[in-house]
Length: 103
Image (cartoon, rainbow, N blue to C red; front, top):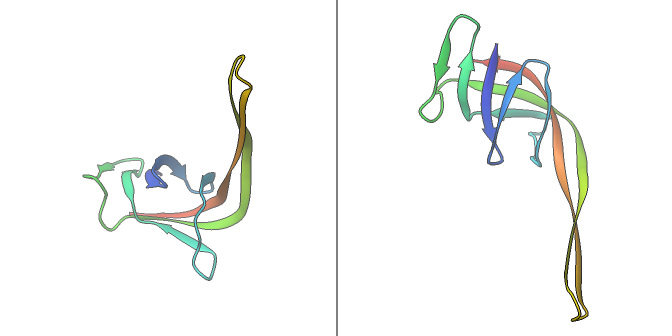
């Protein structure tokens, strides 16, 4: 059984036991996260497609850790003008383990 969920403007294909890195999200007080935006659900013998989301379907997960992605450096310059600009960015992610798919 797998599902396709949408969170943070991106779509993820998840199964039970998967560990995914998503945009930084705050869990509830018990550390559980619920994804209600389920786009597609495959149970093995039947497939359900939402328009755009499936009602009464949800994917549950638990927050494992908050991690940082790789550093991205943007360097802009103009030759012979002594203009240089260096900007770095490091995205923060939440590591989530999928515990249950309900549909």
